Image: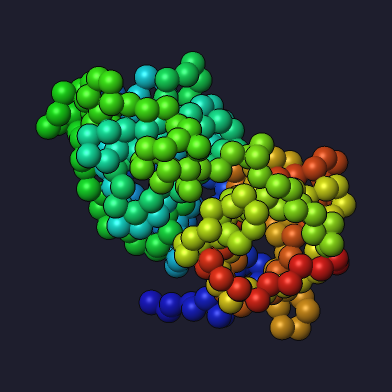
Length: 318
């Protein structure tokens, strides 16, 4: 059997191989073995880059993870995720619906309600869970800031604890606090460093003609951390950026409108793919590329970058 290396593929083939189409994928209701037998824990995962918190690392439809994973999670009203922790940070970006996220420490819990375009970066080794108390399902993008995360450690699971204790993430009655970013309780203070409200984030207008809201990175209002950078880009009609490269991989998940991701080879040849909502392209480190908006309306893109530091990218007008 002849094996074709990635360097032997055409630019078009390589770009296609790094594209994840929402319509080509399916939500996996059996992604998390710890949920089996507990209908109240049911949730579905759609994997784009890596397996995230699922053990299904061999999914051939999923792109290989380097410094981060990207997946979508679908959760229906009345269901929750039991309190657990990770050895690394993971972010929840709410795409639709409202999600309650609880953090637990020493039997006390603080809960925050997140709406569309809000994000929380769950701190490493801190017990956290989430539930949907609203009337509509939640769709969110989860990104874990390592290529192959360890299995989660469960703190309160209905298998070992009463359902209500598990549903409230380990809080006994009277020990749940509402999130207050100016609160004095230690766990409130900690969570305040990791919650980002879309409406409170400054909009950065780049000279290249697009906007950025920085969720994790070096910017006012952002979470300052040594994990991967996370930003929401706004691309007006007709925008075209100049080609740029990064020293690490990046991923673009289209949230609204349409956006073209264009790759450029050493001879100046181009290949492009147009993304609609919930389509994604992962661009490897060192690949020259740029974005443009070919649509009739503005586009927004969730951008994940595989470092918290300088990646060498310079944004200019195309």
